[in-house]
Amino acid sequence: MILVYELMEKGTLTDHLYNSDFPYLTWKQRLEICIGEAQGLHYLHKGVAGGIIQRDIKSTNILLDENYIAKVADFGLSKSGPLDQSQTHVSTGVKGTFGYLDPEYFKTLQPMEKSDVYSFGVVLLEVLCARPAIDPSLLREQANLADWGITCIQKGTLVQTADPVLAGQINPNSLRKYAEVAEKCLQEADRERPSMGDVVWDL
Image 1: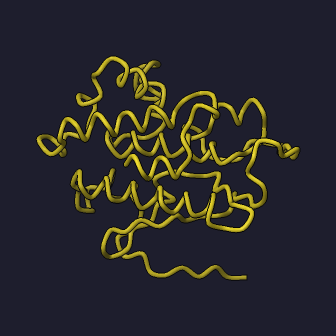
Image 2: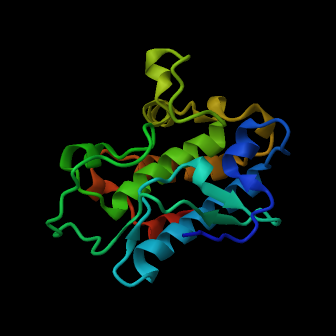
């Protein structure tokens, strides 16, 4: 068996956030990549018959073509079928990557489209801050990007955590709206998170 992808010339989003051999992304490019990824997830959730939950949203699974257009990649953990909360199927184990995993999914062992929304919220912070979802070298309260990001958003200090290469590029209104979207995606209860369609609209 073989899986064939079109050539994604610019590599992964991770490459551009952490690898100095790749060009840095401007704030506008980062926003456009996030919008493209959100559109892809929205299509998976609503545009495919029965719906697909990707279940492993992270920066290494976001590929960029020659024009920096984002594509959703790696469907090894994906689940197809009904995405509503009335489904009775319960997974036998949690699937995904630590740091991006939905806390509600840990409790219920039931994957839902809002689990992808949570993971996407972590990616939004990762894109802004250019730091991993989990960084054990940091202080305990800063090690988990999602928890730390929510704290910074609530304190109004998120701009201080932004990737230094973005200095002077981010309009304050753009950052405010971006932070608002990230905070909504990272709500602990899945019912309080927006749909990916709403995320696309807001971004």
